[in-house]
Image 1 (tube, rainbow, N blue to C red):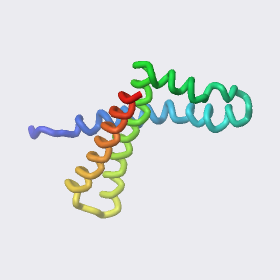
Image 2 (spheres, helix red, strand yellow):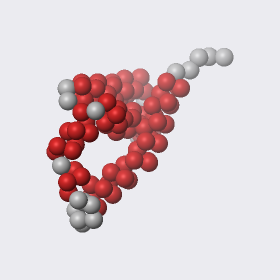
Image 3 (tube, rainbow, N blue to C red):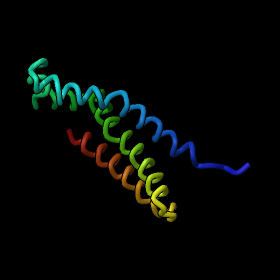
Length: 115
């Protein structure tokens, strides 16, 4: 039986899709509906509270998950979409999209560690 690298790709893809599906609607609800309508205090999204949240290790881990996991999910979706459009240079496309996701992950790590 031939070895496959699919689990390496499918793991972050599945985690990113699941994370985005569960938590992005909550982000939209809080930042796009509750605060603008005044149902939630605008203080919740103040700079000091956000900086405080991002300064702790749990906040950094959560923010990292919000950036890195959907980036890997999007990279895999983009790879499949490009293939569906008829581009058959799969290795080149895979390298480009996964390198972009890796870059987003590294930028997230560096940015969060700088806080």
